[in-house]
Image 1 (cartoon, each protein chain N blue to C red):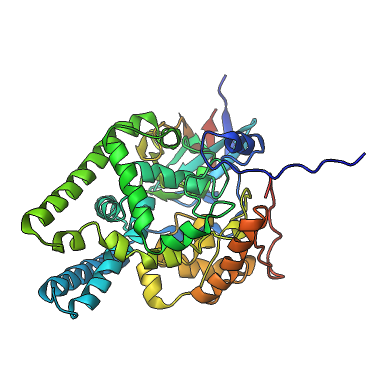
Image 2: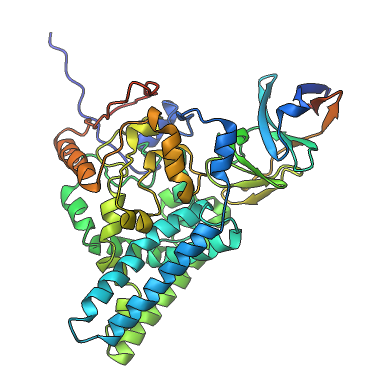
Length: 103
Length: 359
């Protein structure tokens, strides 16, 4: 059963940025879009074993720091080669000044 | 009883052979690589894209191509055409490599279609299939100089010194590249290509090869119909007579350094160069920095270098110095394939991350 899990304080992630969050043996990427709204995806690029948290957030997109593959982090859609496989996304919210994701 | 020495390991650089299995077993495939710590805020700034520098450089590139082509044609039949063809050759046969490379990474321009357009043009000039080489280079960055995984190892061990020397003349590489294009155009992909190109992209690779080959056939036909060398001087041949700068700068990226490691400081070389070579090469002389952080655009690499040089081996102060280091190492590898030149680290650097299978 999925639970809301606290990731960090809202202010720990700048708007249009991403952090890594490890939980229960899994790794996630947690984002804030340019308006500050939170989002979450798998933490590893679907192309190779690379943590997306080191990539660049541009608008609605996250770019893998190794190969320029890009995803829409709000939908998980793979947008640019070499990524071909979508990311899983997870609900995210701000509660009491903390960012939480449902996993 | 005397112990028998292990026979020397004969490297298999194919992507489907014995060394591929060794690399996977050793955890060298798709491994975690060493990175110098860079504050997130600084790295975000370094990774920011901009159209300005690449538009400026591309406009200058096209102007030099057009101007030198005009001079080469206008003075054809006199010695005055030679300097124009020299410039045209380098603009075509060497600049194409760095533009292919940076646009393939998607870091030259901020605007995606600009990266894609220049990538396609440069891929044609450098005689590389734009589809398969995109995937090949992605693998080169995932598994840099990992034997059996990296399809872009220029200095294999033991090195074929004759071929390395001949590379500067451009002929052998051109023949090999055209053979690959022709094979792709015939609908055939090698086992290695099938390993690093997803099957969903195979059709695109074959189509791109057919387009490139059609342009080459049209160029040869034009030369025959017009009874003129000029079409070939403009298209195709400059990849031979103008590639020398690409080889001079490209072969010092990794030659003589380590294989099968997961620290780019051990297998890549940063070299200070004159500004003209840096423009031609689009700052790929900062090669350790590029491999460590490939999403930093070429125009930001000097800043990245300043930020992390405390953690890197001292750069070679010149191209000549890099060759003074690389040539003896490569010659020694001809006799001892296990040898690799190891650069000392400054006291401010963190120790090398060393994961070695062999060599």
